[in-house]
Image (tube, rainbow, N blue to C red; front, side, top):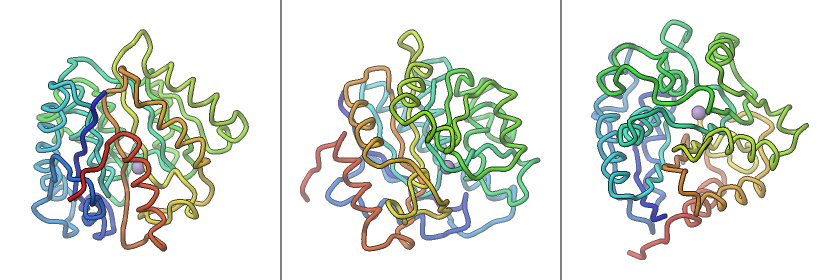
Length: 281
Ligand SMILES: [Mn+2]
């Protein structure tokens, strides 16, 4: 399946402004779309949601446009709140909820009422499951974008109990980093893929770079010790190349200011190159 790159320079959803520079490291690739926020300055809630909402609308439209042309979008960015616009755009093409494999050190499932910080990059998964702020409804419609029983979170190890309770109540499958280590990546990955694409249904994969160990991917805003095996991840990422049920890919939370010796950038390039041939400038 042909894959094209989208880039989002969002940062208002987190604490680290440098995330908005994430798309700058994409040379030699030329993203089809480069979404900017009108401002990446920290803003109090709910003003932050307003800024994010306009950027999300642009991602929503472009992801849907590519998908309608039979192209698989790969979104690269520095703030995981980009997921809200992106996946809702893809789901709008299918008119039904998507399956999801969400690989992340965090659960990203706060709601405005459970989050003390009100940072949007801690809320995208809950929002896509229909549990977010009502402000998103114009973009998301009245239905969940993701099907909870076809959604799996892999490698989480830093979370708050309210997030876990919410997800379990919805029927999402949660695989902690400890459980992942016990069962092994290949078994967990295959089960998540089967669940996400049940009966050939559309699904997506969202990779937060903080799912990896801070040694392999230091360039993230909220690093957490532990993490998934890089070789396993790269092998699985390659498998997706010819998977027609996989309708979109996302790599999030890249923070160039925290990278060390270009390690995260090099990894990002390897993951992109698996799906998108580079165009020399
Ligand atoms: Mn995340």
